[in-house]
Length: 367
Ligand SMILES: Nc1nc2c(ncn2[C@@H]2O[C@H](COP(=O)(O)OP(=O)(O)OP(=O)(O)O)[C@@H](O)[C@H]2O)c(=O)[nH]1
Ligand SMILES: [Mg+2]
Image (cartoon, rainbow, N blue to C red; front, top):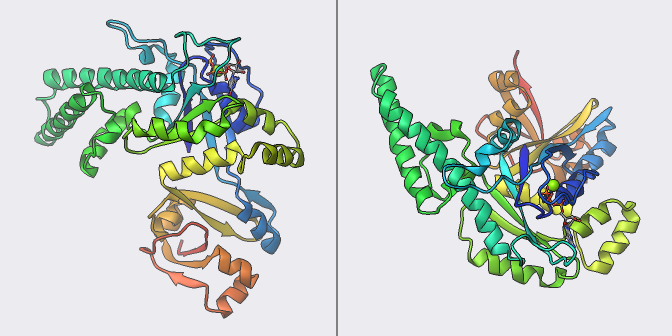
């Protein structure tokens, strides 16, 4: 899973990146142009508990790659700012599974907002607009190409081109109406047709309002007021103080716990953002456990046992026989696979079984 951290200049993107990756990338550039990439293990207490039972050689967490991107230049007549990002940055952005959109909501007199005042709604809409313009430019280019070359080829190719043209025309209307593609409610076949474009406004988005350290008390009210004017699909809105979270991340865990209690922060920003990303992407984790490793595997909610097998290795999906499955809580209560089996809690599930978060699974397969 890869998540792109996006936002206008000076919104706090790199501060959020440092919080998530426990990193020390340089902040305060106000229009910085470097990209930072970091891989974060998804915290999962269950793996530690399972390790006590299985004593594996290693523990493997699910991981998330965060990419901290510079703000795109503002679009002007004839220029789409986002497309002027360096190719490597743009590729990372397009390859991401979701966006983490950081919006400045903190006041700081020593770093005045370039627009003269702090206005999270305006800033949120501004970057959204930039991404809509980027998607529109891509749609227009493809439609242009289809209109000149799309009538050639075999019958199947022509039909596919016609269908693509229909979907793209619809998306063009959607974007021109100021609506992101994620709101377009595409049929699965249409979605498949345009998947290769990796449209920016099709990606699920987690909007993070970066509030000042003194404003945490009013953060939920701000979230609600912004959310009321943001009726989009696959969008979550949350608030945190990136500055505080980054400082917390630099403390020893027990010091951080004391500090968090004083500030009334129940869960660290890292845990919260990762949990929200999972929710946004509709992911759950199933677990595997044995003497070699104890491991968490993220899969889309609703995946079948054979999908889970495929997440581990395509051979396991191909030769799938059954999935020996026990719920994490049952395994923990009974203490071992053998006891779980005796108690009848270890189930033999077939290909179509719908995997649940925390299922501990062993795939039996033929080679
Ligand atoms: N007071 C306050 N300052 C913050 C907060 N978050 C970030 N800042 C400050 O705002 C400035 C910009 O933060 P960055 O994290 O560098 O922002 P950015 O979005 O990465 O900026 P660019 O990459 O230059 O576009 C830095 O001086 C940060 O210390 C916050 O929650 N409160
Ligand atoms: Mg930065």
